[in-house]
Length: 466
RNA sequence: GGCGGCGUAGCCAAGUGGUAAGGCAGAGGUCUGCAAAACCUUUAUUCGUCAGUUCGAUUCUGACCGCCGCCUCCA
Image (cartoon, rainbow, N blue to C red):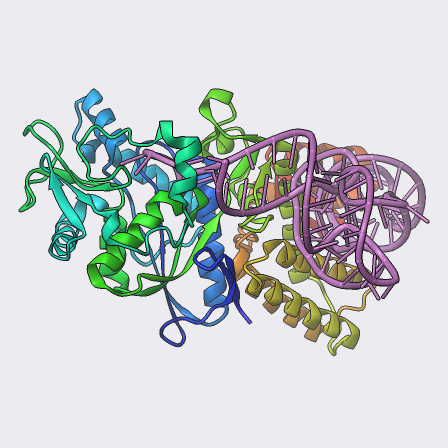
């Protein structure tokens, strides 16, 4: 039974989509004001595992991820550089998708941009105004939280308790609001020079939260199955999305809210001031393989804080390498026909462990353990020559299935070696036959210099890229 | 002050009221011309501390210590 921890109820719930066999999900995507950091990618990898596991379970998935290409930081930085916001964001959007692909995430079905949905936001704000959830003040429009009694149902925010300890941080807004809790739907923009849109509401630009309500409902309907994002977004962003969407439609907005925890770097909060802030491309530039970063990010269940350490990252590289070696070794294994029943039972048990693990709120640690156990059992069988053709076929199929969720094995098709390299390999084999170890080692070193690593096995020489 | 999470071997960590998954690193061994890969064995009498409940707790309860997050624009 597939279960998710729903922030709305603060408990594990059985997952049942609104429409049988189909899942509609929304993920709060990047704000493209800078390169995305490794924490951003934890959220992306989490959502990727979610969508892939849903597909693994046989659901048709419609996944929307927004691109926030307008906000205060973007406007300010674009202005500093004398660029339009499109000019400013274009390279970051491109970089985001490059990173997104590199870390092995499957692209969402729809990736709407905020700036292309201003009209939908305006319509939504008008609906809220008609229903008494919004009011004007100094040309800006605010959401009236008093008009929405369910406010706080997601984050369980307790206003009375908050005021005592955190009051000095509240009400930093410079505009006139009826209530300090009210938030902007539409921010007035006075001059033509400033970034803004001319609308019935007056010239202005959208508040932070309205884009997600507008775009999610446009592409997924007024009520949909899953909304995911980082834990920090639960309040105020998602709380406000609920207020906006349910306020406007009178219908339930989202059925399951899933939030991933943040990561720590070497045990500490990641922050620029601590000097432990890493973008994805920083790590790649330092030589770490994207797949190792992916492996590390998914090795801990999404609701736990993950301690991102460089030791663990190196460990992840080794683990992935070992799994990939296993994949190659399996595909090249020669075996007799028939079936090893004991191994077959083990394979079936592991298949179940993997699925049960992911069904339990995406416990990727359990899923990875199952994969490692499969590797060990199969490698042992290969060593002992007890692997049979039926087992090989079954395990290859299972690996493919596992990897449809994990996506860590990568391309397995063999490339052709160029003639020169092949000639050297042949020459080395000949040298080894002559027991001319000096020449053999010389060739091996020569090829290693070209990042081609040779391994001598029972069944002949094997090569891989280093 | 309110709400929430965490503390398990050198490191990353899963997990459960019945006696500790998995990975990385380490040690020994097998195989090998050497290497690599792989395999086997080994590495926590113990799960922050102290009480309590229980036949039995790492798992439940309480207190304490330590760490982290959210409380208006941060994944």
